[in-house]
Length: 243
Image 1: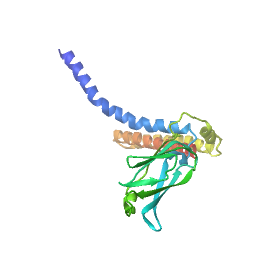
Image 2 (image 1 turned 135 degrees about the horizontal axis):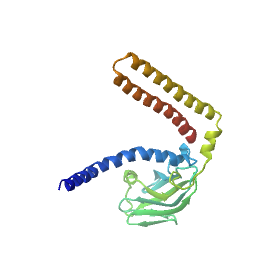
Image 3 (image 1 turned 120 degrees about the vertical axis):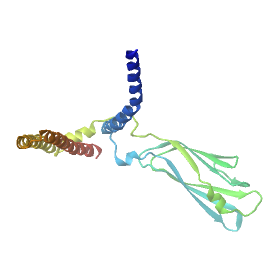
Image 4 (image 1 turned 45 degrees about the vertical axis):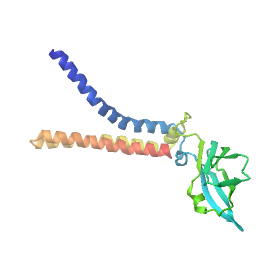
């Protein structure tokens, strides 16, 4: 009975601690995995931004006609290096407002202008115009037109999620003229600094009665020194790989 209860308590303890262990592992391992993943990809700062279609809406009045307005949409691809596929556009018009001579790429249904612009190349720009008119020939309030914002959607590749890998970043690291110098500095600093700390600890232990205190201090100081040294070298590798 006691053995069964002990196994049950052990299983319950593992079950309760498992989420915390998984969370800690995720916090530690995910950044490591992300850095390794990025190091095999030729990524620059400009590539991190995902391409998306954008539009700026401008409403202009038409002279000698209060019942008509011209809407200008300044369309553009936010990326200068990547294309956007299957770009779709939609904008809602107020009640009793209809478009005039609508573009062939668009349709008007349920007070919404819907357009399919196809593919946009990198750096694409276009001034898309729509003329609208009040069906009752009443004056149009431009604020009602401006109140609705256009909705755009499209598909594009995220360079961080593709399976295109390269060893170019590692070549840049090893070919770098400062690589050997920094690597040797790291080894020298780690070896001589910790050797000095070891002898200092023995000297202090021989002259101090509290050996346990000095032992704990040495262990913590050595760990800090190793972390700092490896961290500096890691920052250099990370900076070189990203640059």
